[in-house]
Image (cartoon, rainbow over all chains, first blue to last red):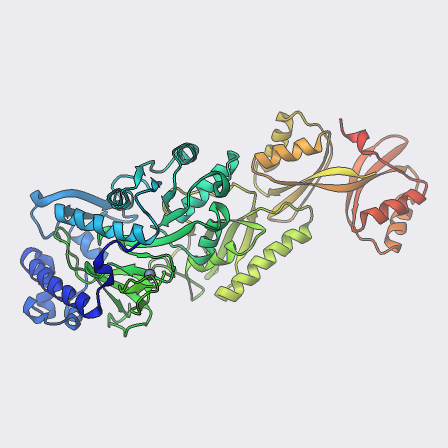
Length: 433
Length: 141
Ligand SMILES: [Zn+2]
């Protein structure tokens, strides 16, 4: 179901809205956010220079580092008393990034998530269980308000206590699951260990997954465990921009529709910062054009994607962003080769003798990178020949996909770490030399 | 004719063998014989136990990769060349010996466990000789 008429506007209509809102936002930031005004002055650009959407490229970028440098409220465009909510993302290094919302910001967020949830098949009839951790993280509350707005019955079960989660699903008749892909797999494993087959004994038919990449292989694995008829869609967002709700997939699973009346997407060359022509792949840059609390202009997401402007079969006309390959942040450089962990995941999920969980360990010996991949052996065997054949199969496929050799370590089932939030599967133990 | 052997995959990590033995002990399963073969990374533990089905179930439940495999037990008299003669019978028929290990040794005889490629054919060939095959009932409780 299409939630709002703003999702079906013509290009001219949407661009007219975008330009008006962009001009308002730039003026507001110029007046209220001194660090960004300084950047604009250094770049020699003033609010009145923004006459068309093309002029967006004249504006300076904002990075995560800018947010850290102005911790906690330095980039906010309203007085503190206007705020009604504060979230923060836990930075693994340094200070967290802090985001503040006014009342209108929260309404916009709810609207954005309602649209994305409706795209993913949610209706007021759903019983929606949120298995994201509630708290400072934007994921859980963002989806919660959006789905509640649609009229779904919310089950805010958060993460942890997986057996109880399964009990709720069974007893409450949960139809919609919100989780990271890796936690959704974990929950299915726990259900099976309780003698409950998620595909047959539970009614979960919609999966809204996010906060982690959803590769095609992972989606196939979700279907295998939760049922072929489950509609699994991924959605995109980040707390700096608002949280979930920037974009999401519709039932055609052909890219994520961006809420363009609130966000303007651009694709740039991450090295030069130049805007790339439509259809080319590069780093996604997002400008918030309707936010009051923290209206970031040209925020560098570090996510790599491509924009699709052709209207979608679903009837929406909004621009779509292709599902991500990975973040430039997550990209590993191994023996000079660029590797996204998602490429390794695709290979692992395609091999039936091993489970979907894995760990990547990088070390450096004699100035050479070494990659070890730990996987769980599902197929019981009595011969070394068979074990070696499994190892070789994984190795060969990885070599074809990555052009790199890896050491494969087979482990017993259930020995690798399981994750409830974002999975952390890479251990980079290389020391800079 | 065949004996059910319990095969378990174990990582070469401190304590893993101990964990397997612990699971079996808790299920009140006695080990009659075992062999551990390993590479630098992992090993295969092959066990003849009193209750193979239960042993497998207990190990699976405890997160081990375990399965049952049919093997042959052969009783040999203490005579020079007996084992060699038997293996010759098998190898002449182009059957591969995948692995073997000692089952037990007594004063009069000894027995071995053997796993071959075509187990049925190997068993038939052996039955034509004068050796005795160990019965599953002798091991299982
Ligand atoms: Zn669509």
